[in-house]
Length: 245
Image 1 (cartoon, rainbow, N blue to C red):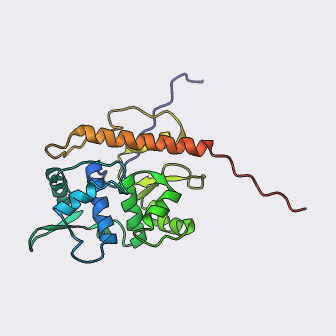
Image 2 (image 1 turned 90 degrees about the vertical axis):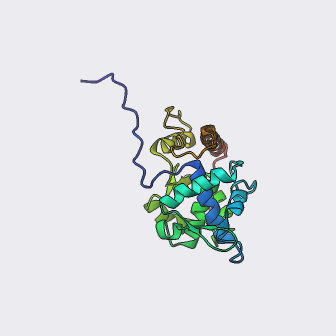
Image 3 (image 1 turned 120 degrees about the vertical axis):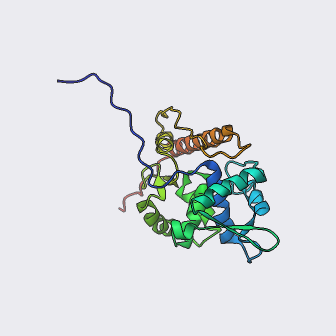
């Protein structure tokens, strides 16, 4: 007997890693980036002032935000409680370093890939290789594939499209399950599930950190994903080589 009941809605997958708020993502991305690009010990670990500047940097950031010291300091406190960040006391001012080599991966290129995804959100593998190469040598897409494979296996990186698709898109593994469903739907060109959980609330939002910022970050990332999906769909299909006579 056939049933006219509508199919059950897709259930969000259980996150493999604890989801990170947009504020957490930005702070950790900046700490990793500066550790990878710093020329000397005076530049890293970062002071609070340097970290605020890095969070609000206009280059290599998407979206660009304007955070103040109170917001970043409260975000750091939450990350310290979870063991993601260590505060180094002494000297003229306290400094902060990330602990992601111990928690995520020992791979230098791998940690660079994760930093770029935290700083800019979902992106094609081609864009990711170019951007991450400023922090670690990733000379070709084949080299990037070797970096991505163990990260994908551990769900530190998640494919939003088929991995072999032209213009395949990846993101980090610190979204909520509902965020991943929405992002995958956007990149597939399908309808986006609408729910309160699609735009996650900042549960431990620091004083003065407007929850609307979280919604704005998610909306911008969704629009980026839609544009990428449309560009991929509209790109002319690659013609096969002509047969040899």
